[in-house]
Image (cartoon, rainbow, N blue to C red):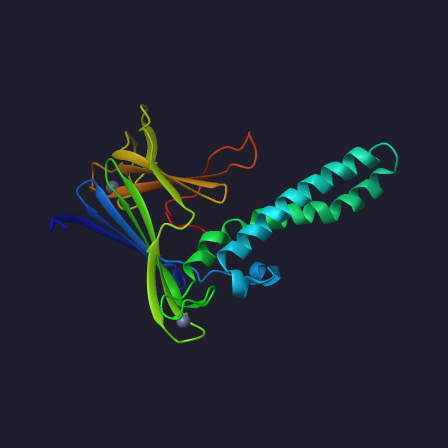
Length: 249
Ligand SMILES: [Zn+2]
Ligand SMILES: [Zn+2]
C-alpha cells in the first residue's frame, strides 16, 4: 500500500459499532466497518442441519420454493371462481409462506457452508464469536468486498477466521456524463461536479447499492453519493441514501 494517503474520513454514529472509515490513496479508497453477526433464527426450521449442513439447507430451500410454487398454482387453478375470494386467499397462505421461506433460506446456503469445522470436520459447527469486519476496496477499475468472520467450533472449541464476499456481487459502473449538484459535506460549498471516479455497484439479496464519488475542488474532500434500489419490481427506482456506504444488514 502506498504511503500517499491524501485523506482519511471517519464517521461516528451514536454507537461505537456504527463507525466506518474511508482511506484514500489517490483514486483508490478502502472502506472498513463492522457488520452484524448473522441471525440464524430462520435455520431453526431446517431438519437435519446438524448432520447435512449446507446440503440440508440447499435441499430445504429448493424444496420449499418448488413445492410452494406448485401448490400455489394448483390452488389457483382448482379453486379460482369456485370459492369466495377470502377462502382463496386463506388457501394460498401456506403455499405462499412455503415459497417465501425457500427464498429467505437461499442466501444462507453459502453461510452454512463456511461453518464446517476444519479441525473436527463436523458440519454447521462454527458459531460467531464477534461482529464480522467488512472491507471494501474500490479502485478506478475494480471493486471488491470481503467479509471477515470470527468463529469458534461448538464441538471442539477450534478458533477460525474466514474472509469471503459471501452472497455479495460487486462491480464497476460507468460514470455519468452530466454534472450533478453536490453540497460538500466538509466545506459546505454547493457546486456542479462531474464524477471523480467510476461508481461502484453491489447487490445482495435483491438489494442494489450504488456509490458515486464527487471531489470538491475547493477543499479536496471526496463526497459519496449512495443510492439504493430493490430489484423486486420492474418499476423500482434508485433512492438516495445519503453518504453512508455500508451494507444495511
Ligand atoms: Zn470442531
Ligand atoms: Zn469542500
